[in-house]
Length: 221
Image (cartoon, rainbow, N blue to C red; front, side):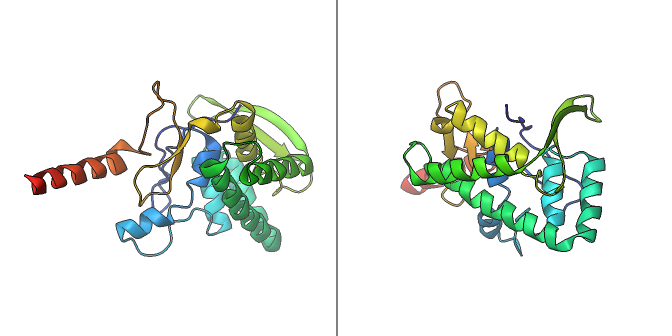
């Protein structure tokens, strides 16, 4: 089963808070590219957690995929093998694009986005050798880790890929939504009872829409 994320997680060492609202790890991974929201808010530069290998590891740490020890180990390994680290983050960005297409369009098993995602999921699962372990977290909880054998970079995407595979196996794609705010590209799993959740976050996109409706009402009045 996929690793469930808290609604909001902030990594204090990063310039921008990392927000987890997807309800599923693979959807939060898709949301790790927040450039559209950054542009809307007028922030300078890109807001993409995968703009560097350090950013990629930082996101995995914030998502509780990697603990502090493994994160530090991966960053040291990246300094020793910069070409392999660069290739790993490049693949992560490519896989993210595949998963975004799945989240936005993949509701039909014959759909091209779904078939492409299945192919990529099977490719990554098939090439990665390692063991799965349940380990304790510093906060008293537990996390399931995938420890690679051989290529240490190859297993970084395994938890994300397994989360996407769970969505296919469990038939969750019908509950995957894109935020109703036209300026927001975030996606999320709608776990609401009536299946009518519209906003990635009520506190941001939802309230912005509410304020816009209020302004229109005043203008009409």
